[in-house]
Length: 191
Image (cartoon, rainbow, N blue to C red; front, side):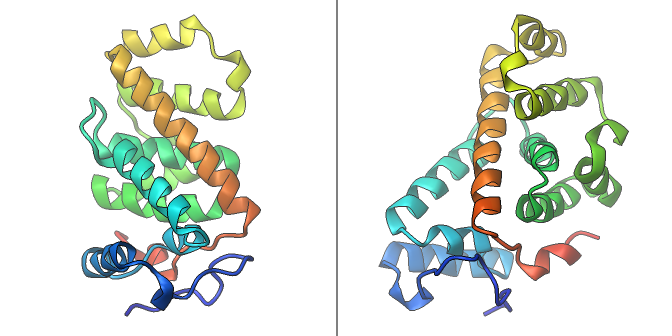
């Protein structure tokens, strides 16, 4: 078992040996593939049904078929998390951007200010939209969706961009509310 941060959240969490069989198997798969159990999963384990719902939504948004690449979805996660200053998600998803892109500088730029990153126009339009959804959601208008279409996104892609940005806005708020801490291993990944 990998080393876990002694502080996962400010709230009590369930001990690993109390989980249902399906979740125990999922945690074992995490250990096998990632070398750790992400603290976000441990944090949501407060309620096993909510953990399953969180995992289902995350897996659907981040891993299912989409016109957005896995990297693009992770870029949205980091950009939204930057706007919300979510330490957990910036650390975990910053590591994912570094790993998927092979470019540590990209991950760092997105964490600090996505506008400083060397991005393709399509990615810039996507992140501009995700940023506006995060910082000024009531100001989203047709012109914002049209800018995405003009950059080559389909309406389905626009839905996916909005869904990923929305999910991470919710996740950021939960992580901040419960003082969720990232696994220490994320800090060194893909550097």
